[in-house]
Image (cartoon, rainbow, N blue to C red; front, top):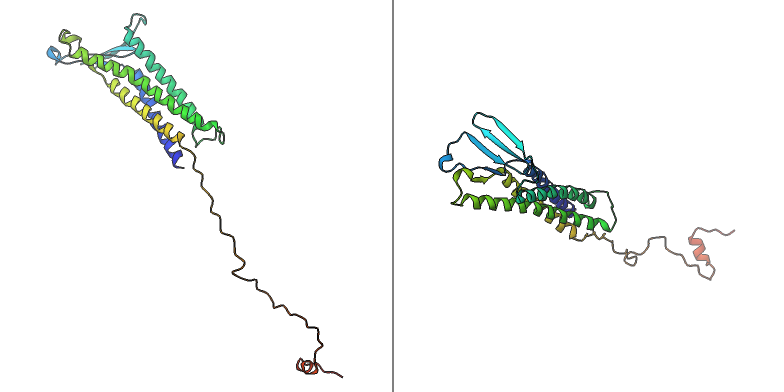
Length: 233
């Protein structure tokens, strides 16, 4: 029963990680304008993501434009796209596989392969979390290096966007949920041993019943017959 609860906990944590990975993939807030130097007070803020670039103006206008040419994109952006999409697809497959392998479901119940299906689901969640963490960490490293590059002007520097924080959190949740699901599935099933009552000792309590009367071979005497109320005529 405890193993089933741990499996549900791991699956729930990994499912939250999957939802966050989708949000981090769609959001355009991977790079945002760094307000440093002469750009401390500005009326325009730029944000870039995997799929589009957005401009926010102080008047409240928010405009986004999707990347027109896919082949003209930088190589790191193309690799980040591929890995984030792969993470989302693998998370979907992990959810399906884990549902079939968890103990709380009736799918393949009683089969020896149910345990290995749950282990496979946990391993896929771990792999999907790593696929999310790699491009997020890579992009964060590039942003930090470019920010502290003295040769780069202030107008071309960016800061870490909100989508990167969501990506770190989502990837970590996917890995943690996959590890919990994997460990709980690897544990053996402990079956409860039924309590067997000790055998009832009949020697302790002899059977109760009427006393056995043994017949004698001699004939009853006159005195005994008179005592029992027998009258001879």
